[in-house]
Length: 201
Ligand SMILES: Nc1nc2c(ncn2[C@H]2C[C@H](O)[C@@H](COP(=O)(O)OP(=O)(O)OP(=O)(O)O)O2)c(=O)[nH]1
Image (cartoon, rainbow, N blue to C red; front, side, top):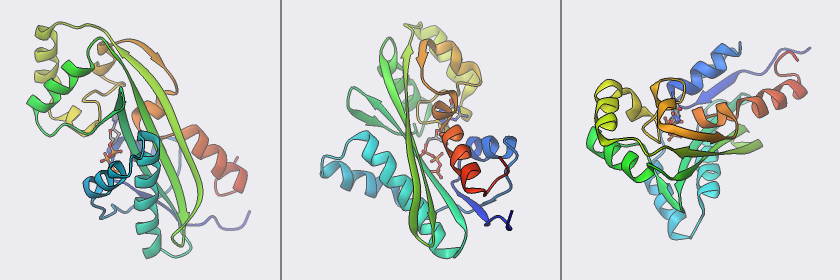
């Protein structure tokens, strides 16, 4: 096997780095300087749906970092929460998280996790994983206690929950890939890297 190409994760997401590290991958982290809100707003102005928004943002982040690292493989990611067509983003305060979880309570929402791999600014691979999650009708007392115990950690998560932690208690049903929910279509990414020979398979 020829020397593997350098691998970068163009993300500031702790969970994405943890998932790749736990899978045994060696990579560097380069946070993209991308105005996600502006890009998301312009895409929504063109009636882009949640899937296209996640895919486009993931590509923006990967392309921006890969321009700076010629010859490297750069993974860009983005996750969008779709509640009946509305695109929700990471809550910026406990109050915002409380409101968001009240909006999600008793309903089914989708998480769309996009990953794009770029080399020299050009996309080589892309995947959008989708999961459907149904939240139970939890009490407001539980919700307040949940946020007291889990803020600010859950502020790093688009749905104000960490499925691998207490967030699992918010749900009555989950359909889809666990890693997609955490924020990275990991199995699809590892499969592609393995087929190419960038990682041992
Ligand atoms: N630990 C954990 N994190 C989650 C879960 N669900 C979603 N997330 C995180 C993954 C991502 O870090 C974040 C989704 O927001 P973004 O896709 O905008 O990524 P983020 O801003 O964190 O980083 P990036 O834009 O890639 O630099 O939510 C979960 O169940 N557990």
